[in-house]
Length: 255
Image 1 (cartoon, rainbow, N blue to C red):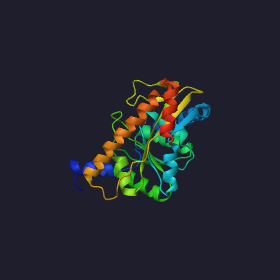
Image 2 (cartoon, rainbow, N blue to C red):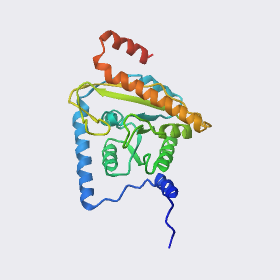
Image 3 (cartoon, rainbow, N blue to C red):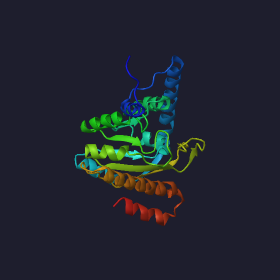
């Protein structure tokens, strides 16, 4: 009989295991229904939203250099993010648990490629799959604090993927002027109201050298944390700013 894996071996195996968790028949039916519902909500609300974008030139410059983007964002904005980046050839990493499988189905309906992985399960192989997709010419995306939080605390995945691929991290934040916030959810998930205005703030890219050691990667992760907080703070307060301050920020972010 094979010897049981030791705790550290189990930890290592879990980081490489990216297969979706098996579901009962009832859970599979529920998965299809929830994914269809989420997709229907996105396709109903999405076309009514009015977006203003700050910093889009950062993405254009990365693509203009022949590289792809490692997109990252706070989990709170996932609905708005999945609508904005639909049908752009982005490959997103979701968790392999039930919620992640529901999200994966909905994303695929909006034109995304998907792969499974998280900081607790399948993370290493998930990053390897994203790296291969970047080599094939796709941008990659995953939430910095997902899938279970803590909220607004970035994981190491974006910096690791950027180092591996030589492609920069591009972080962003979205905020709807009118929305419902699910206060009891760990991420304070935001669902926009129909016809809401939305602001998208895109940060300058963060480069991670391929030869970066552990300390250098940790510094880049801290830089990413600070940048995500910066774009979040601007986006979350955007609709309360005086017009003159909005004009000043537009000039700054669109330079």
